[in-house]
Length: 181
Image (cartoon, rainbow, N blue to C red):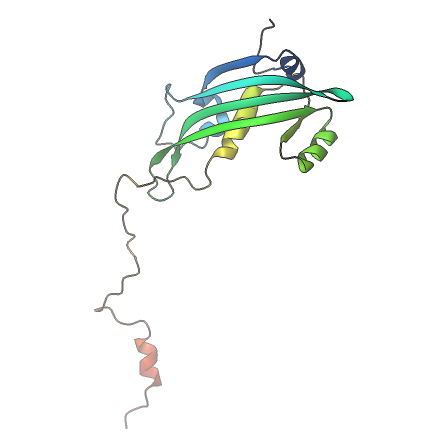
């Protein structure tokens, strides 16, 4: 069995062998995901990305076999709640299949016509980078708690009209009145 380096994966060989690989990376090793974490929610050693990869070579009648990569990953990422602005831990999960073809043009054409993700074949795929891309795509656009841990504080100008304050158009109303003779 060949040694598998997920940071320089030969996808064709991995698929041909029907190989599997799995492991964990610290969340901090995924720099773009870590950049999404608010400053007040430091990433600890317990925050990890668990991942699994499986290669598959699928026979095609009259052509060379297709090269497939199945990726699964999960992580809990602290993000900033857009309601209360406190940290909220968001569980992210990825479960994707990728078809690898020869050439960027073929990948772009097939990707547009297929429901599956199609990528150009490479001899040195960085699985961590691909997983990071997929985790970024899995992040919610507007992260928030189901129920915020603290009651929301109303802004100073919350739209409540004070009956004691002068009405802003009172001066205009005075100008409309006919002068007293």
